[in-house]
Image (cartoon, rainbow, N blue to C red; front, side, top):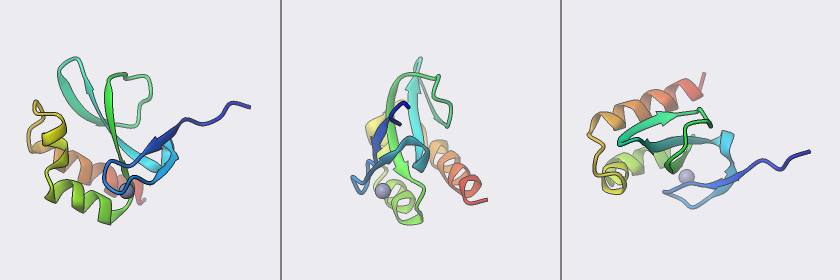
Length: 86
Ligand SMILES: [Zn+2]
């Protein structure tokens, strides 16, 4: 058995398996929200938790971490979070 990679939420610093987080990745100069592990690049993880999503948006965490991202990234994160609750 292979150990699942452990990730950390950029807001609350909670650790957990990758599946518990929404992943934001910078790849080839673009910043995207993805669940695809095959896309590699500098990554940031957020709990699938309303409080962490809200804090990331309010503090503008993503655009501070990835200056090339624009505000539409927050809409993508909200959408990814909504999908994860289904
Ligand atoms: Zn968190």
